[in-house]
Length: 568
Image (cartoon, rainbow, N blue to C red; front, side):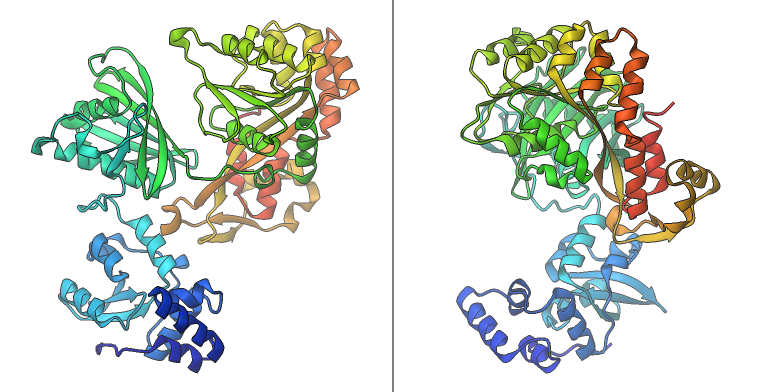
């Protein structure tokens, strides 16, 4: 293909009717003032979309425009252009036809970038135009284990110092050349975890390898394998970051530290455990720079959200959020606190650990080693004249009784409990030994929840339910089952081939009405179960999951997977 010619973007957009003379004059004045590119200015000013600019360039140069949202990359071709050069030249290798590579450029009129890519490829190339934001997203998804680390995870902060240090200085001495592979591997692990939206990193020594897995949208994926010889050095480095005892390898340890990735502070909670082939390390990643979700962004049905807001604004009582580990309970509680957090209210939280730091709220970290237990902190917190108390978890009878007594005596108490559904929650409190009258008087509302994976918007398509899925849906949808379209994700570069991207919540709720309170006071648990089911009227976790299936937000398979966690 002939070398492209330089094009004046402003004239091109005017010529194709995408920009007015007044808008171009404004953009040129802004360009002269700020020095930014004209294309970026017109996009940020909402004069024209990024895709429209790319399509205009493609029409002028008579080359194809490639929509990367629906493009399935070929890793063996993409890796022909190293990641550093792909980012620098804003280019990516798309496909190969008759031995000729087709390369997508954000700006194919950048002749210097064109010449450099041509030299790197060492063969003739065909041009295509791609949108910049789509290109950068694709680069983030498809490049793995690159040789050149961009430096986004070079600064780390110890838990006690809050002073940024160089990655290689964590031992307190100059890093030797023999340690460079360990440093590089850690940098790669954190960088890839953030790119992949991982919530947890699992570093697991095997007999002859070191396996690293990421938990993405609640499911573990093998990310890479490394030489088993570096497992001990890797565990040592991570222990030093979190202030753990590096000489103790026989007992589990817990700690935390902070890293800075892409100018975002990531709080890392670390747990080590001795295994047959070395110490297993699991790290939970919490992005401190990500704003907390509000209740209106948790995807609750409107009537559920309204009832929850009404309950947490009462002057006293207890609201419990239930579900297994990783079901989003803490996110819901923090969302509730963010709405209640005003200068007129004193809020104290008792947590293990403190996951997010909330301005204006008194947060206390439980520390069992120095006898700073939930029970002890909660007793002290109630002497601090709080209006609202958040207890991280009702772990035992004593903590539950103190929390419920606080709810009786004029405090709003928010907490969590590990139960499968709302109906089993009051029964669990009674089984823990909490007096029946205390549960009936204090408990105001129980919210149970799960997280389901959301279909990737970039590869969503319709599908016909399998026979067993059809029968499962019929239980909730009845004769309307064939009136809906059912979707799934076929897998693409944006979702790592899984067909899912992100998660959202499904919920069920039980309010402690007079009928429910009378049923709890009855010695017959069957009476309570019957009254609870009658109040819920079938609004269960399963029905809420089916609601998302009908909306096309999740798959039947995912709804069934979540439902099987709480159904016999």
